[in-house]
Picture 1: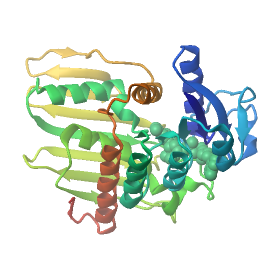
Picture 2: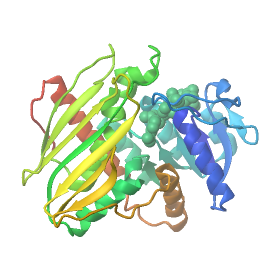
Picture 3: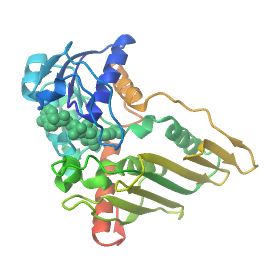
Length: 340
Ligand SMILES: NC(=O)c1ccc[n+]([C@@H]2O[C@H](COP(=O)([O-])OP(=O)(O)OC[C@H]3O[C@@H](n4cnc5c(N)ncnc54)[C@H](O)[C@@H]3O)[C@@H](O)[C@H]2O)c1
């Protein structure tokens, strides 16, 4: 399986490392080419992630064919699989291009900023007979995998409440930064908080409605802070917050998921399950890199032709549907917005 990578910014570099590792391990994939419109990205240098304080290792792209045009790369390389790690507002357009060039696609999250674009991506994948997977990586993250398994098995009874946090300092503070432009990133709500949105619907299903408050802190951006209540039948209290304007605080994520028979925590005190009988344990969980696991999973699906049961694109589209309702609610100062 010939693979190509489009976008060598912070996230693309993570994908690059994972392709190298998969090839070293003998996975049925060969990265043949990389593409970035900015040729400086081919230089051997460290790169700042858009998560404050995180910097990549130096990477050497010289062993791979390098392109500054995705069209040219798709035409010449005819890859079987393309990983897309470019700014969000370009996800839909680039994904369609790759399908039409005959490739399967792994596209970074958020899937797109509009539900209609997500629909178009899914329909085009079906028309072209290709796999599409979106990088909703929490579905492959050890601690969240345990949460899913506990909910699915029902072993601790029904859910009672849940709180999901992520946030930290702002993405690089350059005013030209696409992360700080609403029509390009959707702001923190679409960009970062979408991880928890996707996880909440993975764990609890689609909420009936949402009520969100939040603020635009960087002029011209989408919401840079958000706090949402997800309304479900059964009235279990599910809330999520994100804020990427924190001062003196690196990126962090945590959750507290309460069931009738126990509470699962992932926070600064570690990962643990406190049961109603008073016992506290750290549940067995995978510590493997979720970004590696998700691409390995997709390669397996392409090889086997099996159905994607962990992270199908229809689910990623649902996350965008909920995020869009949250943005509407936030614009209306917390008004309840139904999710149809
Ligand atoms: N899964 C995660 O946890 C996670 C984390 C960070 C970012 N992301 C997502 O990954 C995507 C990329 O984010 P990033 O932080 O790497 O951004 P970035 O700005 O660091 O890098 C984007 C790269 O894409 C290149 N590019 C732009 N348009 C292009 C085009 N038409 N063809 C080829 N290259 C092009 C840019 O030159 C740049 O090098 C975003 O959608 C972001 O939300 C996901």
